[in-house]
Image 1 (cartoon, rainbow, N blue to C red):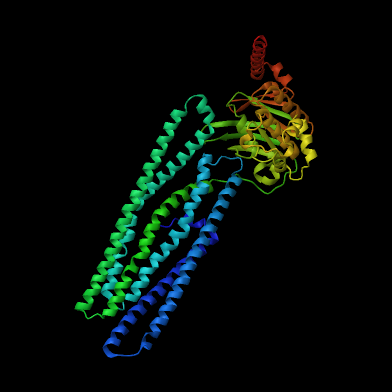
Image 2: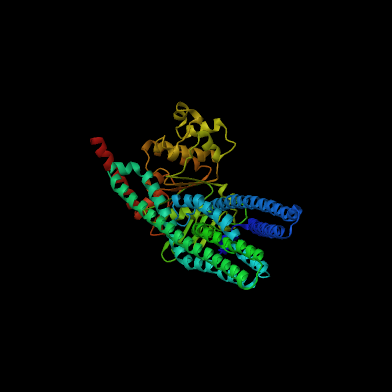
Length: 581
């Protein structure tokens, strides 16, 4: 009933579980003392009526009752405080672990987990685990200990009643185990439907413009309703299961207590058991079952927490990219006979060798699916080769410190992210010491300085997904941000994709200028952009087929030349049509 993997996530916070359980046991003893004092006071009252006496005889039961009440109150408060502390620390540590894991994975994907799913797991999933840790686990230990303590005390009063009560106690965990397998399946489906609904909702919101344009919003609305209905049904199954199991536990708990009470009464009638001893047994009979009854109620919370926790574990258990501790001393990049496969079966890179000098512009081109993006992921450090080496300055990338390598690397892609912050703050993410003058100098290089000055200056806020500037301006701003980072290696991954000709020309002009002093790697589907390159790698089906400058490759009249001429003819034909119109 305790998941060891989830328990291990608590680390040093496990001590709070044992402190909480120990205080709950102290509270149990306090409760027993109060019950004993009440029974003793009733006994003394009866003797007072029979034999006479003074009120002083009630002093000690009253004193011990007050002490018991005080201890019970203090332990209840402390248990609540410890549960709260455990919950807060568990949530803080779990969210920190999830965040650190995502940071460690870096540019790697999170095992296909969607952004909505990742958000739900990080937020709601951690909340459910908080209840698992703070409510379920302490109650588990207390529920195991409390009946044994009560048995050890009551067995000296009447062993028959004590034995009957103890024998009925395991029926509650048996009923829990009986529904646990079904419950696990239900809660696994519940979380699956929950994340699926979140994915669908986020997808619909992000694609709302397209849905309206294609007049498909009605169909998407029906789909969302179906997803919501599926989630409603699985939620109702969860509630029905919880209600049924709670009813079973109530029958067992109060039925067992009733049986114990009945035997206590028979003890008075048939075995000469003291009425006051029988009263004590009657009052504590329910205490045999209440801890396990509370544990059973927390069980459903636990199943939800375990389902959420397993998703968190699947994220945390992903292997980290291998990095070392060496510093980068030379920035020449090389792929040496690299072979890579995503699924371990089909190789998407086959014995690829490439060299990227410390200065100059090197291009990787080829048709879609040829392996360009995979090479980029190798250079990022997102993937490790199946065989072969990726080296930086002659050192294997796996031996380098990631911080040291990334300190020398900048990446500009077709979807480089700009944060929902001011222009200045976006630049300061790349370089914390950058001055306003340096920012405007970078903006001037990409022909954006006038636009920024006229539209709020460096305090202009870039909205979410850079929706308040054009696509070309977004790409140029991303380039300017990376320019102030002043890195030694720049990778441009389709950086001119889907932008206007003017922005493309500005970006390519900056790339060529940058290559005079930096290592510049350009990945582009448009071959006209790589004509000035010092070296071009042409790829097909995961292999390097041709190497050389643009002039050399055109003279070979191979696949590169054929693709270049085809693209040129298409562009010239389009330009003629546009002019004619």
